[in-house]
Image (cartoon, rainbow, N blue to C red; front, top):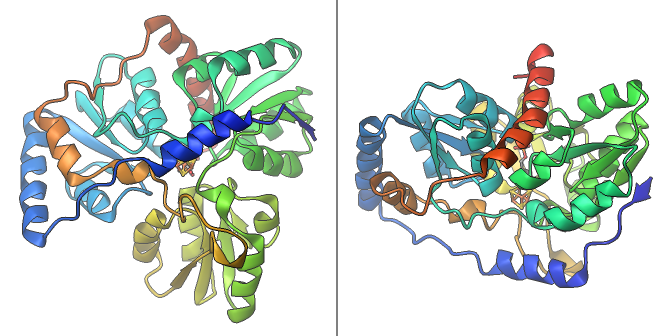
Length: 354
Ligand code: 13P
Ligand code: SF4
């Protein structure tokens, strides 16, 4: 498969240093936690707001979201839920591209986030100027971008996909004879290419969490637990995916855990997912694929540093005063970005996948 140029080293270093310097929330006593739960619950009612939360954030935020009638799920489900829910304020508890997707689809609603600094290394590794120039060099190709991108990159694309539907959508485009630029995740692009046989030029972005999973350490863990099954998110390296029994989006991994006959599961994704996975498959023992070990140290150590910025403290604060926390997108960018996202939602809805 053809590759786009490597991500410049300086940008890779910037992304790593941003990941390492992301702010960490304070830890709470049970009393502080209960008081914040109560406060947030009452503010959500007052503001006609709903929480839309990703599986990777702290489990207390997931519990609160469930308790207040919000949604906890993957990025596809988050976009779909926000688009359908009648609340006038959407509070997106995840990373910025998720808030932007909500705003793109719901311009009439206020979309706020606990902290707009919540980045994503895939988004950061696909700057609009270099990406757009690259697309201009290949005008014959359909531009397919992962949801983990900026509004501007989405606006430059023909299709948006998430890990839930990337294979289905690219297979569909390949079936129509279309050649593809896939961005920004190199591992997901590689996986999609193998599954579909499509002609893809693959952008070389990476996720600071999944890129760190080590095949050598996984092999060792599998030897220690020979009856375990391996389940992996497709942002993981090809050598890890090659050892997986099931590969899929966060929601698909929870379903795979539920369906698995194995007592022990080795999981290659952010450990934030373990909260819902334990709920869905309480009898299973869950082990994380190592990110370090003999061969390396880790930057993320299996937990997204930007998802981890979200806390009960900053959630309560944004509900009290949303100034500086609201997602805004220039209208022409928003309108252009909405087209490929709606295309994706329509595709997945027609397949009964959301
Ligand atoms: P999902 O769409 O599977 O939730 O993935 C989003 C993400 O950021 C994974 O790292
Ligand atoms: Fe982005 Fe990776 Fe964090 Fe997901 S886990 S939001 S892909 S940096």
